[in-house]
Image 1 (cartoon, rainbow, N blue to C red):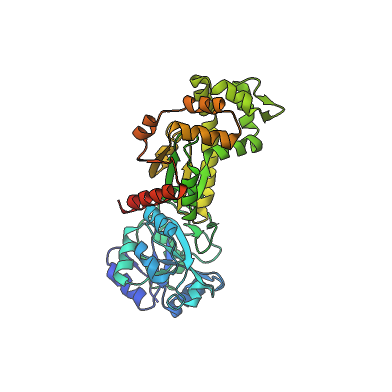
Image 2: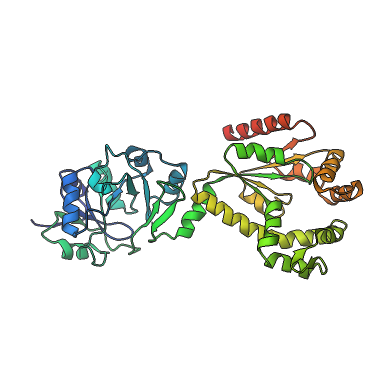
Length: 402
């Protein structure tokens, strides 16, 4: 067999691949050894030429994200989001395979397949011309360094494979990152050219996040319950704050330093702190600024974990949603308001404090006009919880359709 070098006539490479031959192909990471991913004989040749055990599955190269539905089933929205963000690029996504279409030899007998869309114009064009996916591990004998040039592939396989497409030197020189999205939590199987942190960040960005805010006693719990019923991860920033008081010694230490006498033996004296900040707007602002950085870090951690679990909807409940910067992360912000008397009664019942103390809290918070100005939508919650939940549901449906 004579191995030819192809630089421009990609139709020749496509014909070779369609008829069961093997071709070295360039990508942005390393060169791959490509064969028809739907042809068992061609795939068997790949294993034989590389000296690769057939118990190790192969990835399929595809020209775009539209091929996901063709070769895979139960494709999660998160996978589509990552493909939109990183394809073409150095990310291989493992999904449930359509086993009647993807040969068992590609899957190594399993029920999943890894898809990859290479970021190289020549290989993408070859994929389009051939009209088939390429089974394409790195173009090196097993145990040898992965090649970054066509000449290195030629040196490995001259006379053994049909052709090599010369696409120049690969820019990254490192294999793609493999992410298993066939089950949750999603898991990086091989750390390659794309850092896991970038994958997680993209998944978080693809989450739909609803921000709920409003003054204390407005009754946001009903709204949170409605979102929870829709499968949302509900994060009450006030609850996160109180959890951090018991799990993160850095937070009470910082509060104790800023407000002497409010932390004793590592425990926060809430009444002592309340007496200081709820009667002084400047000190309340200082407290909020101090706690925001701890809360934001913890919210980020939880959203990241939720995204890796395949989550698609999250709700953030925060009185200081706007000033803390959380509103910038939300796709929709909703201000929940109630009249002063209703709020006072709710705070008294919730916290077991006097009317005077509850009224002091109400007076210390931002006016309704603040929420009307800064939120995308505002809804009133003065009465029946069921009526309020229906209003919220209608608002979310309008946002989805809008």
